[in-house]
Image 1 (cartoon, one colour):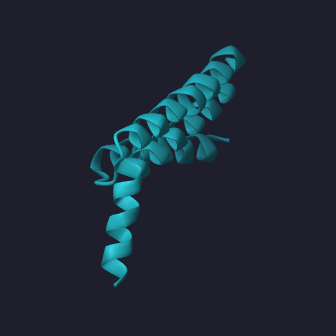
Image 2: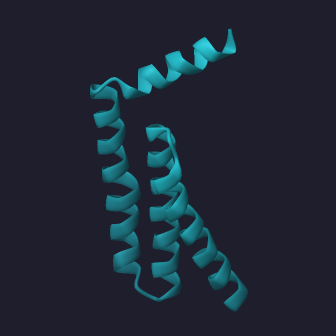
Length: 89
């Protein structure tokens, strides 16, 4: 069980650094969502299911949806797709 905890903490650190370092906003949001899901698993291991449910619902659910809507409203999602399509040619 200790190896699993250390592995989760390692993934948590990797997700935190990856969300900050990533240059694409959409990738950063997906990594942030992964960070919240890993954090909710850690809350379950710490025997705090109320915080785990809250982290999963708010961190991975509501916040990620708000980020996706914001990126869509400011047209960053469609611009990233167009940039990828241009680089393929």
